[in-house]
Length: 349
Image (tube, rainbow, N blue to C red; front, side, top):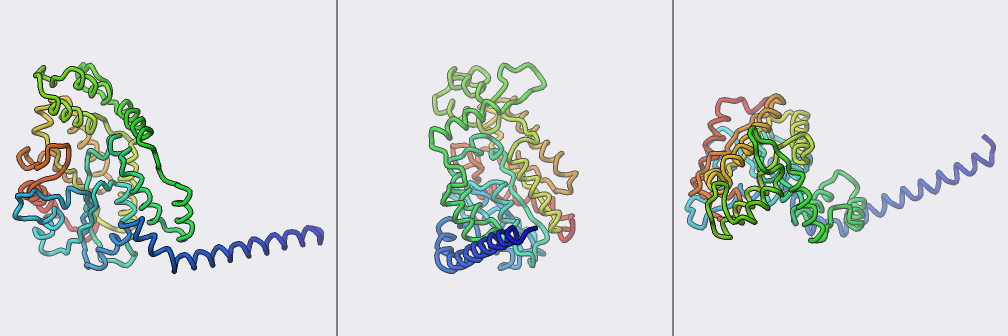
């Protein structure tokens, strides 16, 4: 190497070092000035990983709006997680919930729990609607992905740059609608008997255009719309390519590394109404998908509690497709969870 080449390399190295020092200084200035404001603005989730440590909880329950939604007539307004905790007096339950969150968010929350913590068991909500394209391309996804960026284990300034350059989904409503429709066409399925439709899109259009249910019964537009929503939310067959499955896989691997016992709570859907409006074919697909979750994760050591049929129609208090239960419905799920966990050593995998 010539002296001139050595001199050039040294000069470049000094400039790179200077740039690195400048970036570190800028990151420190940002971290102690505007970063707290940006966290408050973009990341309401970041406090959640501190819950089990602050509450000295050995079990944490992760859920979306099903966890805290209550009927206006409820006298018992406890959440599902709180009810489970009350049925397991030997343990301390920490409940973490936010509306519309899904497995990718649960993973980020769990990943940010401090290494020194009392957690022994993690209960994760499995909302079967979250696997459908309607939820995957939800209009709430942009806000959630901003939160995910701020939860990254990365320099504060780098995270702010990702936000500034919109390194998250930012579809227009027209683009989002196209993605949902494309996703519905990709929500393919096969049944064990001849069936005229091959994906959720075809099935949805058939109901919407005929104004009748699977049994030929003529119904109102509101009833047709509800039947169509059920088809769009649940007419799919799970496989390895579903992004939510990949997220649940990451959760399972993370819990294995951390030494946490992992429990999946398959939420109850309004199976009574689904059977009435969409018939046995959609019920079959939903049962099949629940079995997919069980058969995929139990061999990994995950405890899967299937609450799919645990809540009756009268205990859903909204007419739209949601997993929102009155106090009797929440208690039914909590009882089944506590009963399943009662005979298991939750302090070890």
